[in-house]
Image 1 (cartoon, rainbow, N blue to C red):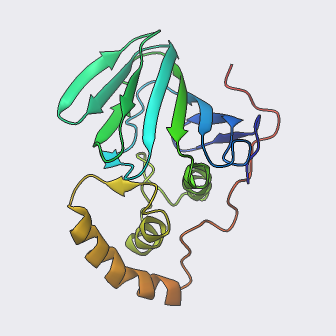
Image 2: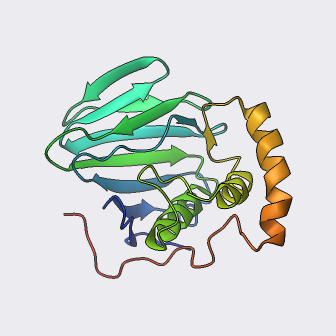
Length: 193
């Protein structure tokens, strides 16, 4: 489990997260982190957090392209936006420079585990450039494990539940885990500044 000050990195995209406050620090109330997004990063697919608000508190540098529901806009240095629970959202960095931003997720639930698992899977070459596991069985196991924290916006969740429900038992038998076994290996001494 990560602690405040720990840094994790996605070697496929170059994204870096520095945890500022973790679920353990805040009794599960808040996860706060600084996010470094390299130039020309696609970002995650359109997704929802069913029980959490994700607040992009401030873009510290660069310009982020954000989609919230059907609206898309540029969020420049000093800008912010929030995705209430259940709101489809995504973001990307189309620019030539890195984007640095402060992000908060309330309540934290197991969101830091989602990042740790995704980045660890990337470290093993098991995700695509959007952070989605390449193998459908790994995707099913991970999606089932973290369904309270993160869901794809499409197809509808009922379809995802049926599909992943069918694949999850097969994935378990074949040894796929929802949480990556190396979950939470921080990059020592790294800082996005």
